[in-house]
Length: 67
Image (cartoon, rainbow, N blue to C red; front, side, top):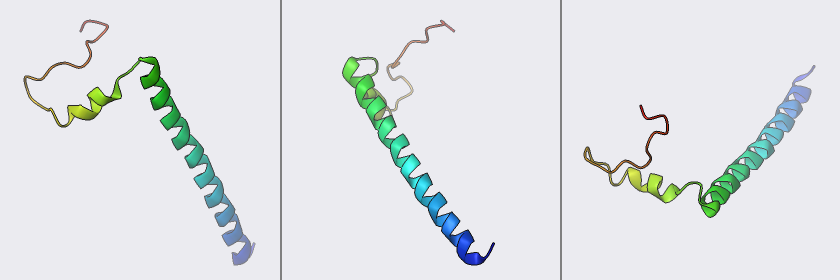
């Protein structure tokens, strides 16, 4: 293979990777939107966790196994 062919393969691979990553990103955004809309999770609590960090802070979720 010559250098031109290798560069073309790299370009096609990069473009394919970017397209796949865009689909993954939008799928993740949709998952977050759907989870919050159906009430399974409230991601605003987690977003405020870094702002309201305190040693005596309120626990966001209880462990279901009861450790």
